View 1 (cartoon, rainbow, N blue to C red):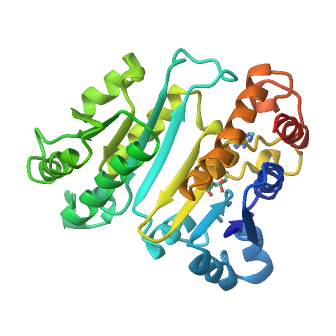
View 2 (view 1 turned 90 degrees about the vertical axis):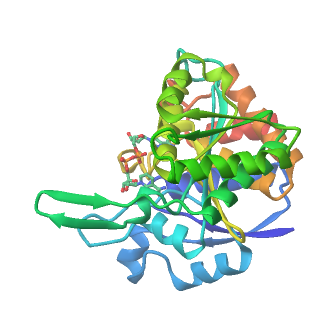
Length: 331
Ligand code: NAD
């Protein structure tokens, strides 16, 4: 049994968390849980977005399943995700995007994974005012951060039977920064001879992604390109609603849906728990529980393909609980 930390979050967070935990239990996932209320509602109750006990749990378990949190507006809060990313050095943001039968898009054959470096590049926040008319923002690329994101992309490819890793860059223009990122990619690639390695310039990547998304497999890139490309790939499969993600570091890993707390539908029991459930499947795979993850994924695919029990966001009329029960019945 592995103990994991679960943040229940705001809005639809508690509803989709309950559904996901029921499905994990039905699949006999060998997990025990430490649950915490976190987010805006918790702040109103106890004056902290994340209670100290919740941090202590993650400190101990190293694995966090996090449901979405409402960002309080106008109170000077630092994004909770930035806080978690920094505190636990979650350097890799990993987003798979896979077409599925429930959402019709012009791109039925997408099955790719974006590895976005999470800690540096133009997001390091090193900016300088030169004059009222000139501002500088410094792009920081280090060997340390580049090596670890590139290596984790290859490790993931090997662990998940992926065939190719593509390095996305603009090394033809930013010869030193992106140039080093690409050099490091080329240094590391030979350590994984079973995986094909290639590289593409970021602008060409955008065009190729919408013309031939089926040619992409795993992609690895610095922070800014990763931010943009991962949203582009979300669009290819029909939007943010069905997208899981994981943020991993050397010692800690956090799994969450890409969508937010959906306050407009909170409490109505119509939220779709799939993105959080697929995030939980990534967590199971991270823990080596591949067979349990595979069974859950298969059950979800079957329910989506039948189109008999879909939540309203996918054009159906099912309640969250009915959709959950349909998945459990398949299991
Ligand atoms: P959102 O993703 O919460 O909602 C956008 C739209 O998608 C809404 O109409 C919502 O009903 C729908 N939707 C989202 N998830 C759904 C689901 N699982 N099932 C059915 N419909 C779903 O985005 P928003 O409205 O811009 O943000 C709401 C709050 O969430 C904000 O406070 C924002 O800061 C926060 N947020 C948190 C995270 C996070 O914790 N990781 C991520 C994004 C936004």
